[in-house]
Structures are given as C-alpha cells and as structure tokens.
Image 1 (cartoon, one colour):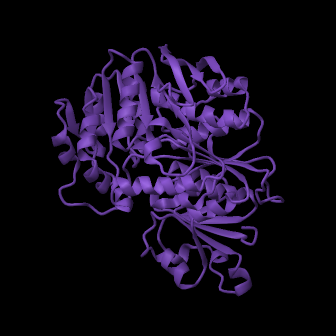
Image 2: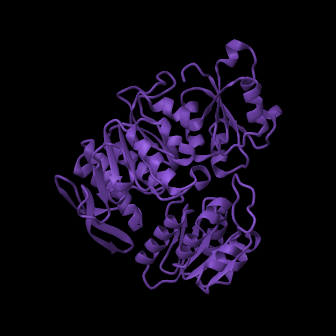
Image 3: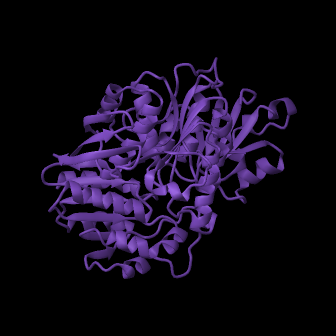
Length: 468
C-alpha cells in the first residue's frame, strides 16, 4: 500500500469503503471517489477533504487518477465494492486501461495481514460486537485501530486509528492491534487471517451469492479455519462450524458456554446482569445500550477482552460507557409518552430481535414498526419468516422494497409480504405519505427498520413527532 499515493473508490459512500477512504486520507494519500447517491456519510467525507461525485461519468474522475504515464499509473489504486455493477462506465474504463484494481476486502486483508487482527463476523450482531470490542480495548489503553461497519456514537466515526499510525508510519506491524468487521457478503471475509475471531451467527442470508444455507455455513467454516489463534463462537452455532479448532463459546443464557450471562434484569429500560467467565463472575454489570441481543453481543466482546488479558474493572467501565452504534437500536426520542427507535434490521432474525427487545423493555406499550424491505431477492427468499417477525408488532407500516443493486422480480412486492402477515393492523405506505400517515396514529413506541434509504426519514419523523 505504501507504493500507492492516489486511491480512487468506486462506491465510496458504503460503510466499509468510507472507513478505508478515511484511513488512506489519514495516511496522507490523495483520495477521491464516486457514489450513486449523496448521503450524510458522503457529506462528511467531503467535509474531511475527499472529492466525491455522484454521476457515473469518466470525465468527472479527477485527472490525477487517470494518468497513463507508467511511473504515475503505478501509484494509482482503484478500490471497488461488489455492489458496483461490472458494466459501470468508470469501472470499465479503469479495467480496460489496465489500472491496479482491488476489491475492498482485498485491500482490508493487505492492511491487516501483518498486524494482530481481531475479526468479528456473523450474519447479525457483528457491527455492535466489533464496536464494543474496539471500545473496550481503547478504554483499556491498548491503542487499537478499528474498521467498523457502523458509526460508533462514542467516537462518531467508523474508523479508529492507533496513535502509532500516521502519514509517516503507514504500515501496521506485528505489534499493531486492529479490530475489523469481517463481512460475509461475496465471501469477502476470506481475505482475512485474524489472530482472534468471533462468529456471532450463521443464519441463511445473501442467498443471491451463496445459493443455500449449506454454502453459507461452509464459507463461515473456511473463515474459521483461517483463524491463527482463538476462535470464539456463539454456543448454538458450534455444530455448524467445521474448523478443526476447539472453540471458546459464549451465550446470553446457556450455562454450558465458556462465557454466559445470568440474573438478567431490566430496570428503567437498562439491563443489569452478571457475566460468568471461566475464572470469575463479574457481578453488577450494566450495559450502555438496550436490547437482550446486545447483552449477548457484550458477552462476546467480554470473551475477547478476557482472552486478551483486559481486567474486569476495565471491561465493566467500557460496557457501562458504550453509547452504541448509529442505527442499531438507536434512540431518537425517549420520553414517558413516546419512544422512537431507529434500527438497521433487515433480516427476519434481526427484526425479531429488535421487536422482542422493545417489547421486553416496554411491556404493556403498543409497538408500532415501519419496515422497508431491502432487496427483492432477500424478500423472496425469506418472505414467510419476514411475515412472522412483523406479526410480532402491534401495528405495522410496510414501505415499498428498496432495490439497492437489484432489478425487480416479478411477484415480489411489499403487498405480497403484507398478504402473508396474519396481523390485522398493517398497511402499505408510499414514501411521500409516510409523515401524514404517522400523524393519524396514536404512537407509544415507534421503530423504523431497514437497510435502504429509510434512514433519510428518521430526522423528519423525529422533528414531526417532537412538534406534536
């Protein structure tokens, strides 16, 4: 990476891509990129001095990234995300002209290969768990870098940089500690060879890539085999991972695991619990973010920290002070009369965890959910499971499917999903009518859920509800 001075990103607004862009900018590189749409994240990157355009147009690529002079061309690296189609004109240009082109995952693998890497993977929970681990290690003065899949509220970024890394000392070494979110999409995580890895879950997902659940589990097993030292698994997935290693296990409530929670209580919407480790019981623990699924994530993070020799006191303080990740059970309004939570949930298991957590924390209150399905293929593959999860709501507002990288699939619509639900309190709502529809409702607990552009409605909803 030292040889490249100009780094161009195709899909720079993605959460993983933007972390890499920020990293290279901090290393003193000339960074620029393209993305399909302008977002809060791309606005932030532009404010940080990174040039970005939003039209697929070769003429808009800055000249410093298009040089055909061999000595200059060898200093240019093109980084792309698999979400960018292969017929994208800028991708085609760089490909035909013979530039150095690498996937985001390859670049992350190169950056981390010489370091002591802690990787967190799983179909759910990896962003919060990796952010928690990074926060614990930072609180314990272990000075990690971290490439995260969400914006941590404690640091307001998806990139943490070790104090040892700067434009004069760019290359992580064997002494460097790096926490990464290991993404299973497109088998990206197979570029990583971590010292320690956590696998939180292996539910069927991304079947457009994998085909079936068996292929998903096989890919996670391959990832587990690449772990150099310690493999930490959620207890109930041990039988699904074939790694040849004896794993360290964790669970939110299974006392046969190496690390587990006990005596879990909710007081004033805050979780209090004990963490049982192989050598001690950490009593009177509190977590700075809500949700039983996040208690489980905190057990995984505690297991990593303990295996690295972090003290009970340091773990206790870090869990208590962790503010969470934006769009992960993210409180927008929290009053006695109204609670508004925003969450990235876009898989049936994630919806179930988010909705059940809200029901546990606010018993007796009406739970209203707004869900924007993400991808036609995911909606098709898990339609029955989506319907079951959404039926946990007292009221459901379904938005139209967010297509992302896909073209429509005949017969796969939000109406199809609505028809599968058994609940009678359900409607489909167009984006333009969402705020008006909410104004007609008597809301107690509202949750927005989805991985599309539903996040652009969070602030307008918050303003409207705050003014009511």
